[in-house]
Image 1 (cartoon, rainbow, N blue to C red):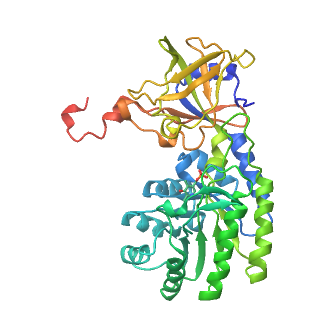
Image 2 (cartoon, protein in one colour; image 1 turned 45 degrees about the vertical axis):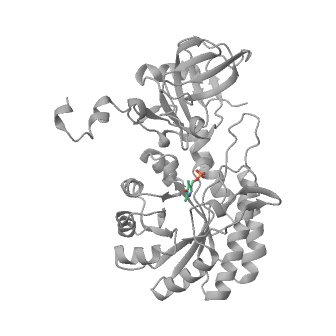
Image 3 (cartoon, rainbow, N blue to C red; image 1 turned 90 degrees about the vertical axis):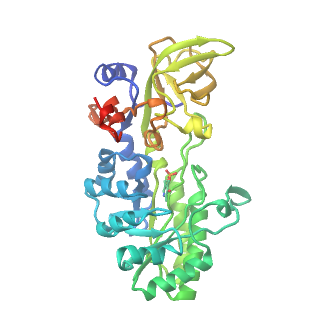
Length: 418
Ligand SMILES: *Cc1c(COP(=O)(O)O)cnc(C)c1O
């Protein structure tokens, strides 16, 4: 069963100061995950997690991860700027972008970030817009076809816009070397939210074999292999979580099988996990403000899909705890909705829950990654605040809620300002 990392009494106190809705993050849980990941890959000398900033773009969260030895993976100019402000330096920053604007490459070079090229044509583009090719470079691989774990299809890289074909990647390495690159890496992201402990080892097998082939064909020994993100979390209460220790051991096994015999025994393993690190360590807290009885039973909340888009966008399940009613029977069926003028603005459909009364606090679980981050302003809805529960139990406001002034601030015609 999923248990909130704060009690009802704690939340009531927090809400006195910071009104709902808000996302709240658990510092202890974040540190525990970072430590478990680093331990699982401690066998690899150069291992580093580059946290995917897009999952939870808040500097305070990034700072916690920094103190646990993580770097950051950025995909845009502003994510690079945020990482710079937190104090990430040089190769502590990975830049994995696609359809990349020139200004983003320029900033990545200024910071000395590792650039992960999404496409063959980006070699020329990067050289043109930044004046040279950096000494350290990474190329993103797309093997095409279907990506399978044993016989099960886990994704279709042939339908994905990312990465280079094998032929392009081999040619890219030759050209990059000619143009002065000295330290090389490869990267691939082939399946999302995958809780199968064989995901990383299988992906590692694909990339490790590619590394061996690259060495044979180009003479280049890669320095690092980036397994990217994709390790999942169980959103359903009875789903099996991924076991990061088993995953680390699995990658180690494949490393010894494929890389070591090929003389590639000092390759650093990198990861870019977002969801795995943060999703369970965040919750969206909202209040029931209406109940409605028509053909179905509805609970209307003060949060909406603009605060958490995953249910509306992907039909994603997010577990809901009615705070203080954990031990009551789940004998009421509800659609739990937000107030957008969109019928898909539902956090839950036909969900069995304890009887909800107006004013009840609902904790929507596993919103710590790709939650607040995907927020938007449709219907003039404002982004919520973000709070951090520290290890000592204190709560810090790490982003205030947007105000109507923020919403109007970007208008071009000043007479509408107030
Ligand atoms: C989104 C993304 C990640 C993080 O993915 P998760 O599913 O959150 O682990 C990592 N790397 C790249 C390049 C991404 O686009």
